[in-house]
Image 1 (tube, rainbow, N blue to C red):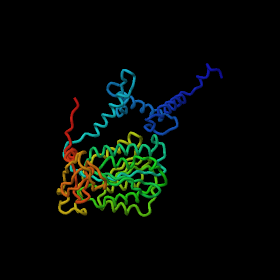
Image 2: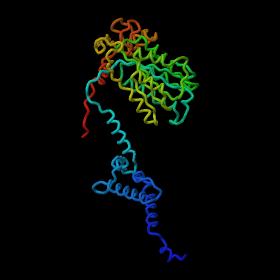
Image 3: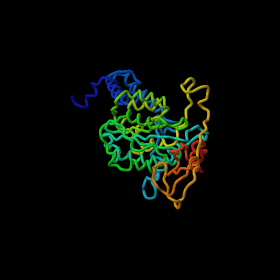
Image 4: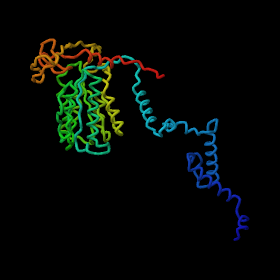
Length: 393
């Protein structure tokens, strides 16, 4: 049939159905597909598409320059500006600084915290730490951040002590004894060749070793465990939940930074002991969540009827003895120290038993008195009385 005579044989109703079907497909494929009645191209489907298109046009703002759904989008790219050299580094650093300032904003109210902290840092040294999803590898990055964490922790908690425990080959290895000297703690993880990853980790064995290390601590001192865990398995000799009950009874707070994925047992350990659990998404996030554990955690009030709470006595303050030693100069005669049994000139004299000690803060090995210096004590109080938030000018 010639093209010029073809239009004469088109049914008007069929033509209307055809265009309605085409309009339904084009409009219904968008956000408003379900607004019209379900059909395969009839008039009802076309009307539903028209109504959907009209509703989308009405969703624009009064100025007609934006849709309603665009209001929920944060245009972060508008906040980035190039400097004179065409670099974006300055804008990125400013955005990171704003995020950190917002996170560190505090109400300025005094919060009860423990300034005498005892912490055991656990490092996963299993085969899973050799993965390179974090550069240069999980193990190397964990060692780097662990050293920075120890230095920052002692800077903000000068009265605290840290011990280091490793997890590999299904056992827990004591890498460093509990000490208040940051240089001594850093020396325990300085030699990388002695810390090479091998085997599988064991959370239960490492936690039991940490419990034994902190079993003799007084009630006024906090007991904390920070675990850098990169494995998806744990090789335990017994039920780890029995160990969890012991940690709850001993008031040991467990916090875990996972490098692989979330495990139910890890989250259970943290939630039951009032600790924190986080999964590192990248290198920067790993450092942020680890350094959030540097400030002393706020003490939570025990619920009514909980074990160890008797008529509000749990909130009563406890007095403790501290000694302020006398410092010996380098020109003093050499003598034997009571802590390491070595002969040296400089040191500190215990005010109670008059023995010589190498470093402060520490506990006297003879009389058990806690030896601190006045600057250390003053620096520990800034967590109890935070500075009021300032307003940038």
